[in-house]
Image (cartoon, rainbow, N blue to C red; front, side, top):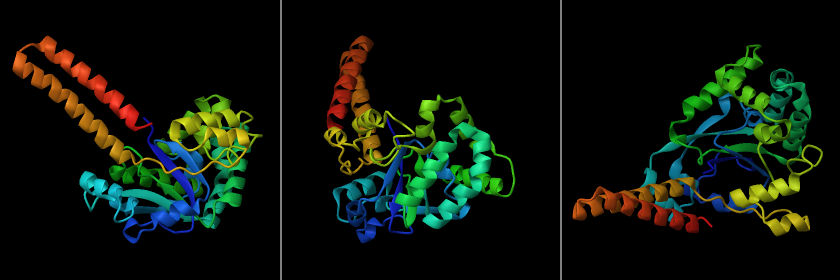
Length: 288
């Protein structure tokens, strides 16, 4: 299961606020976006400093009056918050350029074309603000120490320090990866016509089709027509988690109920497996 994070070009210097119905305008604006899985990749981190860390209310991920907001309210309550990142384009570009030599010395000079291509992408496509939407991450409400520590290590690099443990982990992941996979690990994925560029990934068309089928971002017909992909709203991962939890409860209840009436563990296990299979098929159908 994917847990996506997004780097967006935004007109706002903060997360859109569902209490003010700002998400509708955000989606209609349809600015550039990159996607990664589980956590921001290394080059995204290089855009930010500790001063860019913010928090937003979880229910404000959806506009007031929507069914999605009501579901979030039931799921996490009105007061839960989570960390995210935002900065302006000028500061982001300054940090990328300042950190270039240090980062390339760590990950290897063979990655310079990716670093410079990413810098050009940010300069050309991501303005006036850069926003990292993190609500799809696992346990994101508790992730602020992770964000703060990673950003502190980057700030220390700016003062001439050595990479700390979190940056070292990211660096080793890059150095151990095949060259063909490093662009995805360093910078995430984007629209087929924008990122990665053809010189950095000649197979980008097929890779975007695969990623579009996985994440729901790219229409396959658009890829072959050469048209820009139609932005598709990403499903809320908190709702997915709730569905999975309810499915597990149903399967367990089927097994325990069967044992209660039959006193047979064999029958109980069989009922559990049948219920688990049915729930899995149902969840898969709902996610089509």
